Structure formats: C-alpha cells, structure tokens
Image (tube, rainbow, N blue to C red; front, top):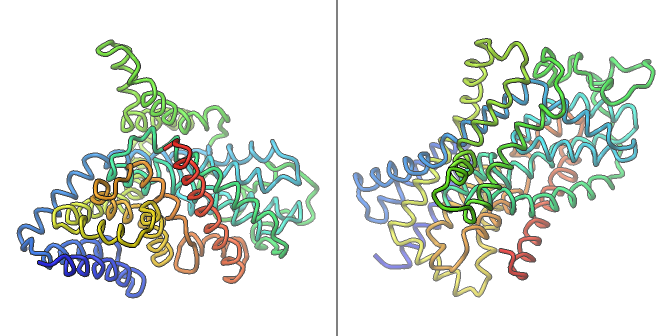
Length: 463
C-alpha cells in the first residue's frame, strides 16, 4: 500500500467526518465510529482487526478519563443546582463599580467555566446580566457574549472540561500541567475577547421578559437585580436552593485544582515512600480530587444533602450530561489507535515536514477547522488531539505544546452552527449578524491570543 494512498485515505476520512456532522447532521459519535471502522478497512486492517482496534482504543481511553468526565459533570450540576454559581456571580458583580460591570461578568464567567459548560452558565445567569443591562444601560451585545466567552474559553483549555480532559488523556499530559498552562493561555484569551467586546458601540436592550419585573422599581444592587425569583431562563436552576456562602461555593472548584497542581509540583521532590508523599499523590490524583470536590459540594445543599434528590437523582443528572462527552472521548481514542497502527502517522508527518510549516500550527489549524465547521469546541479539541497523538514522535512535538495548540485552536470560531451561539444570541436579544460580530469575532480573538501566548512560551523555553 503506497504512502500516497495512505495519506489520501486519511484526508478523505477527515473530509467525511466533517461532511457527515456539518452537512448531514449525523451524530458525532456515530460519524466517528463509521469513519474509524472504514479507515481501518481501507488501510487493510480487516473487519475483525478494525473492530478490535476500535475496542482497544475506546476502552483504554475511557479507562484513563471516564471517571474524570463523570465526576466533572456531576460537580458542575451540583454547583448549578445548589445556587453556588449564582453566589459567585453576585459576589463578582459587587466587587466592581458600575462602569466595570463587563469585567465583573468576565471574572464570574471565567471561574464558573471551570466546572460548568458555557451554555449552562449563560442559561443560568442571563437573568442577572439582563437586569444589570437594564439598570446600567449597557448593551446586551457586550454583556451577553462576555458571559458566554469566559466560560467558553475555560471549557476549552482546562480540565474538568470534557474536551481538555479527553485531549490531555490522549496526549499523555498530566492534569496539573493541563490546568496551569491552560490557564496561562486561557486567561489572556478571555482578557483580549472582553476588551474587544467592551468596546462594542451597538446598543441592544435586554429581552423584555427578563426585566419587566424591574419596570418602575427603585434601584438596587446586583443581588437584588438578579431576578432569581423571576420567570427568566435559569431561575429553576437555583431558585429553590438555600443561600450559600462564597467560601462554600468556591471550595469545590478551587480544592481539586489545588490538590492536582500541588501533587504535580511537589510529588517529584517529596521523599519517596513516605506516608506524606503517598497522601499527596493520592488526593492529587485527578479522579480522587474531583470526587473530593463533589463531596465538598454536598454542604451547599444544607439539610437537603441527605435526600435522595441530592445523593442519587443529582448524580444521575450529571451522568446524563456526561454521556455525550464519554462516547465522543472513547471513539476519539479509537481514531487515535487506528491512525497509530495503520502507518498514517508517518505519512502525515512527512507531508507536514515537507511544507516547511512549523509543526505546532497543525493541531491549532485542525482544531480551528473542526470547531468552525461542526460548531463544537469539545469535538475540535478531542479530534485534533486524536489525530496528533500518533504524530508526536515523528514531528518531535511535546505533548503539552500540542495540547495547548488544540485547546486554543478549538475556540475558533463560534457561529450559527453552534448551540452556544444560538443560546447566547437568542437570550441576549441579538440578531444573527450581531452575534457573529460579537461572539464569532471574540472567539477568534481569544483563540489567536492564546496561541500567540503559546508561541511566546515556546520561544522563551517555558514549554
């Protein structure tokens, strides 16, 4: 089998993957399975051999990341339903003056984007943001996209976001490195996108249903304007939840990050074989750290933490959220296995080297293309990582560098084929054109900024 045929088969598989998802709206999991099996057959692995490779890749990937995705989704659901997300947002808004409201929303969204999917953050918090827009006269074309972008960037660059979890697992990047360096490229992206959005001139009023209860009312602080008792989207999430403290709300988010990062940094220098080392490595193991975070979230429910609705039903709700990322991650692992075992990796690596391009731009462009065409940053991060993982030795790329390139590229570009785009545009009372000018352009800015920071870190030897 010629090198040219192998390369053409690989490029054809990627084209079919994008076509099925973007044009024919086939579910990504089914599409990935079809592409992986057919690629194995075309490249001579045989029917039985192809299926065995699929099962091997699927199983090994989920074995390393499956529980992480589950506990991450459960934690996000607990913070949503307990009222912790609302508390963090209200506190951020109180810390900033009125003319700094966009930056307060960016801060709250960035923190909440660690455990929550961006769409969820928007649906939950749009009543608060709409009330603030009503009271301050700030355009929803500023505030709505900022609410989305902070969470969107964090979901793209650091665990426990499903895409980064899968990407880090596929590439063999430690969760500590993924968090620290993900923040290093993600935070500048959020800042650059917020700066762009804060300069928006077009005024868009909030949707009437979010602010009609404020008409004729006297002024009030952000907490009063939150509308948690109103009829806006997201009010059901935390409307019946007890009031929670800021410390209690932040503890389940920051504790696992601290445990994982500390274990990653301190583990190699602690005395080998001591009980202290064993304890640090145990609680810093990402699966354990995220489960501890779920336990720390239980007190947010106060007396209700013992109820079946908290201990059982809430966990099941998190499992339903986790189902899609789990399936995508497993089949993505199968794709990486097929690419590695069929010799595609060497052919693709040789082609890239012959172009003279810097190899680090390849995962960035692949992730950007998949996200732009399919509308999914999760799929962009994961697919790019699955394609690049077998290429690492041939291209002499560090796994961490590829991880960050995938994470920044997968932010580009949100537009009308994305659920997050429609949720934010619709609830922010924007037209499609206004959504593309705000969300679409800001997502490009965040991704390009993060990639620029990555290249600076490469040039200075930080990665």
